[in-house]
View 1 (cartoon, rainbow, N blue to C red):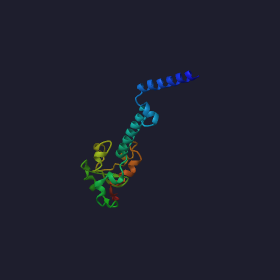
View 2 (view 1 turned 45 degrees about the vertical axis):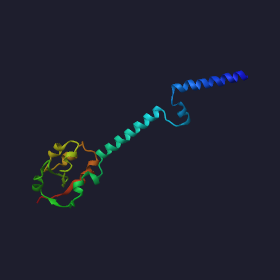
View 3 (view 1 turned 180 degrees about the vertical axis):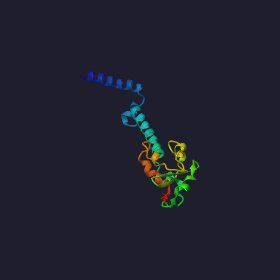
View 4 (view 1 turned 90 degrees about the horizontal axis):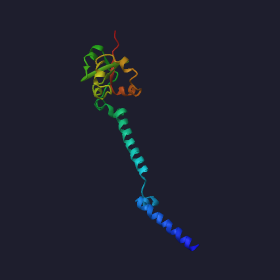
Length: 158
């Protein structure tokens, strides 16, 4: 019985040392000091995903406080009335006003940020963009975002 015990103990020790040379982190892992490769890869991918999500969120959903810094720094009376003739004078990418649902918006600062590019906005510059704005290409968040650029209302024609 004693010889059997010595043999099994010796074999167990030999197996442990032979496995250790195959896995240099075996002693650390046994004590919980290091993580395995799959866990490290999972954590690295998770962190990369978080960075991507945060970046995309900042690009796709800019907060209203930072989305139009130039407009927010000036005081605008959103009830100022503009006639169609005045709005028509702002018909370029560098000076871009549009009318949407009888509200006037200065989209000059936003033109370069527009996902469709400034030329998509320029098609309606100085005129009524209601039909183009309410198209299926715009997600619902755009309806809130555009209010940051509102400068007035369309004067009722007499």
